[in-house]
Length: 65
Image (cartoon, rainbow, N blue to C red; front, side, top):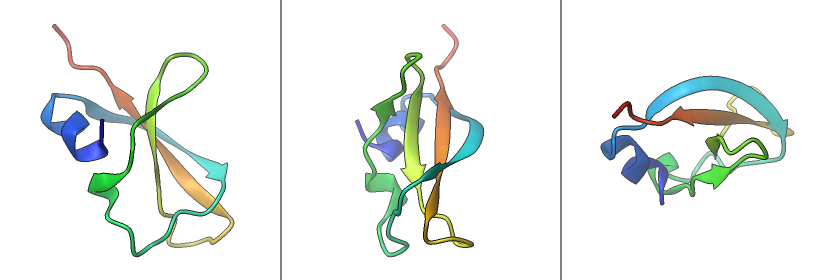
C-alpha cells in the first residue's frame, strides 16, 4: 500500500518522529510505501528539508470503525 492509498482508505496522520536515513526530496511522497513498525504501527518515511542525515517517520492512525 502506498501513502496516497492509505489516506484515501481513511488513515489519518498521527505523530511524527525523526529517523536516521535519507529520503530524496525529489521523490513524490504519495508513492512511498507504507511500512510496519515493531509495535504494529504503520508509518511512511518522508523527506526532511532541514537535514540530509535524518528523515521524518510519519505514523498513520487506522480509521475508526
